[in-house]
Length: 206
Image (cartoon, rainbow, N blue to C red):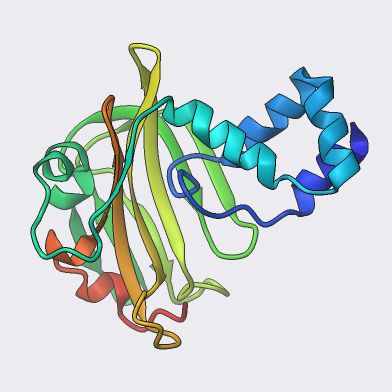
């Protein structure tokens, strides 16, 4: 068990749902609850199969729809991702995001390297400030994501915003991705279709 947990601890986890939830926590629960899975991780010294299994379980048949290479906006994204109606504000030292509506959800912030913040059942209102870039932070200009999720009718749903390396292949260029997980599908899209990202991706080193 210790070896399996250490393997998970030192593994880099990326891909589907990692912008929305702390997928390592879900994977760790599987290791603690299922000795067969733990033994397999120890034997293979790898968690790739476990990540795939946990992701598949969470999605529960919901298809993934990647719209980043299309031009049109998505009606479902517009109705389920609250970052589309958020305000992005820059001060002399920081960049803030404020959601437009009240919300109670599990909050997950993932910064570059190993930074993670989990706040369950967080109460958010229009004056709540999410500080995503700050000049005095050591890694203030590197990739990050903010996700909000909850369980509704037995399924995990939620939405997120993340700043990541651009798919253009040009080193150091950033783009913003929006995702939403509804009861029916998992959607990923280019945030530039929906909101002004000038201050959010400005000077980002991704």
